[in-house]
Length: 226
Image (cartoon, rainbow, N blue to C red; front, side, top):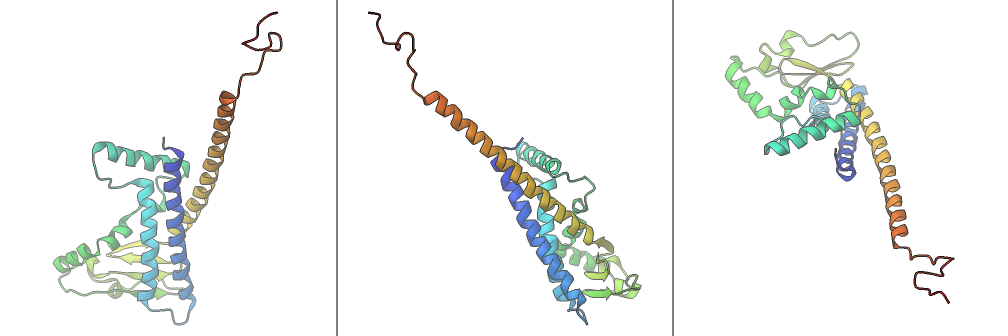
């Protein structure tokens, strides 16, 4: 089990990254109400910031690719499991799917795969299909080959489509908001426990360091009978 200061460091980072992600999420949602919507570059700027911070939280909670010696890897995996249990994060959490984050983090590899497999070398990127009654992208906008549809967004609710796969963003935001609240509550619990333990140590030190009281019958350990 992690020591409280170690757990607090991980919880602290979870809270910070959740704050960053949710701030980007709010900034992403607001422009969608504008007519016409802001350009796709700005939308994906906020989406990418949202997903990067969400991915950091996911790495803390799952430690998907720990590097180092066997002992270090085991500590990473144990830490991740302990934090998921403490924050009541389910194994099927929306955060557990890191495929979308992998697309963005390894975009260079996706471009190379497009160059190798597309054939036509068409690119369908930064498209927005937004509004009531819109069910998705046409085959043309989605790309004829899965590697040709790069970053596209449809909704509401917002669904990101990257390289032939679609991802719902709202459940990720809701999960982060819940995890953040639980992390804050757990930090408060740990702090209260630390205060109790500190008071207990102070009380024990006070007892052990207090001078001996004289015996009321003998007058003290050094007294002599007359």
